[in-house]
Length: 428
Image 1 (cartoon, rainbow, N blue to C red):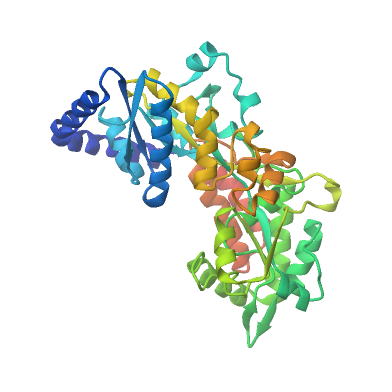
Image 2 (image 1 turned 45 degrees about the horizontal axis):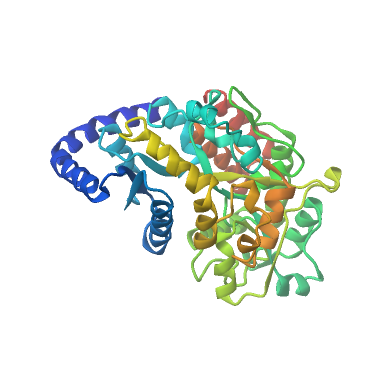
């Protein structure tokens, strides 16, 4: 926590100086935009997307500007997150911008993001009724709402059909116990090296969160973290037995090498060397292009959960900076792009999963990707679990990742969990 606050304070100081140097140019740009807008009020929108994705955002901006005559949104592709924060801290930033749900606690504490509660109350909006269950968890900090979600990221199970068939399986695992059993049977070791990974250990994220949540466990809530929960203990205990079966050096070598090649042509799954993979919708096109004979399935739960399914939820969002010069116009556009026509344009053009409930069964959204049959089902039918939305969220992620890594290296699950719990006790 101290490190983050120190970084924020230092960054703000540096940014204030840098913004003074560039204030003349930025003021000129703002006045020019106002002239171009005519009688309309300008809303400056800085977004993190670039390339083709930036063109999709501009299409949404054009549609919004054509839909009303009060505001003129002016977009600016700014793929550098620190540059956005620099502008906001220096008072020369946007009226609205995008980010990730995990950033909200820090943005609230550092007075970067504006609370939206007055706007929400004035317009009679109940976000919990509007957005997919679980997606608002990351937008709220200390009972105040700072952002609305635009997209929801959940995971699914990719499986190599050829490798499963060669191992005697004709279908993906239906339970987490079956997945763990298959992981062992589909792993091959030659001369002390893993040549085929049966377990979904690459990428080295996603799998352990999903395996933790698969029995209904969570890592707790802000102020009441639960590191030593039943699900995490199950996940690391299974990992410990898997590593002992195939050797820590062999498993660690494959995972480390595979992680370095994630999403490249040499990615273990894309090159046919990984049987099971837990990943998001962005991976589907890569798998298609690779030529791997693969399938996609819902994440399984433990047998004890029956028909219940769970998934790890993370969000992208939009927020209004505290230094916005036109917060009313920003709010109007925020509603359009998260709740109005812009929300549908965003997911159909960009290929993201919707955070808006009304889009879950929209046929245009469903047709946007062949993978959506599974991912939209996960969004609408699974219990969606987010990580605790705390100030030290990134430190918590590092703490849990270190616990996983220590078991991959041959350590015990008990020791890893205890050390993680001790470290997390100081997080806020």
